[in-house]
Structure formats: structure tokens, C-alpha cells
Amino acid sequence: MTLITLHSTEDGIARLLAQPGDIQPRRDDICGRSLAAASPEHQEVFGDYVADLRTACDIASKWWEDTVNAQVKAGVSRDEAIRVSFNKRSAGPAAHPKVVWIIRLYWLACSKINSDFVPGQPVYPETFLLKWLVDTGEAELAQLVACMPYWPVGLDEDGDWS
Image (cartoon, rainbow, N blue to C red; front, side, top):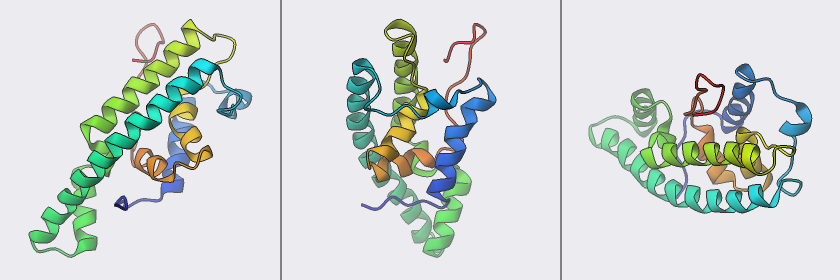
């Protein structure tokens, strides 16, 4: 099934990769860290993330298709149905709770690996969650994540991701 989107995937990717730098400064050498250069812990958890995100994508794609089709059944054109659906849920298929949960879960998992296992070899969570999808050819999964207008995480009072 083709993922229904409204906005540019490339713009979404660029936006999401840049956003965390507004909160915590980013170093170019860490932003560019490849999956192959990452720790075994990062690599293993990334494999789990891809599998979980693929499952969530299947669920969210069907849900989003049904959301758009409900608008079509209400009498609007397909293009208008897509616009109306995105106006109601700006993240489109990425608004599905399972997608949001997986993104949060693995953002925090990446952050934990960085602090607990490989403090000298960090991987930024946005690199882990999105750049590596692009790098490994997971285009549909990257497209899904790129629908998010922002990352569903924040910093707590101690400066830790939550």
C-alpha cells in the first residue's frame, strides 16, 4: 500500500533532522555517524526499531487510508479528502498512536544507550530514527516518520529527553 501524504517527504526529513539542534546544539561529526560506524548496541536496537516501525506503518497506513476514504464517502474529492484529513491530524498517518509510541520508545532507547553503554560514541536520536532509515533505503518508513511536524519528545528539568 502506498502511503498517502500531503507534504514533501524531503522537507519533512530536513525539518526533523534539524529540529533537535534548536534545543541542544549538534556536532556535525555525530550527526553524520553512520549505522555501520555505530556501536553494536545501537545497531541491534535499530534492527528492532525497523521491525516495530514496519508493523506500525502497516497499521497506520490502513488507518490513514480509511480516514481519507471516509472523507471521500462524505462527498469530497480525493485531493480535498487528503487536505481535510491532514487539517484534522497534521501528522497524517504518523498521528496513529502506535507510530507516536514507537518513535518515543526508540528515541528514549537511543538516548539510554548513549548515556549508559557508549558515552563516547553517541548517536543523536534523530539520526537513529530517521537518517538511518534514509541511509538503509527504508523509504516508506522514512516517509511515514517525515509526516510528523515535530518529534514527540522534550527535555525534562535535568536536561534529559523525556
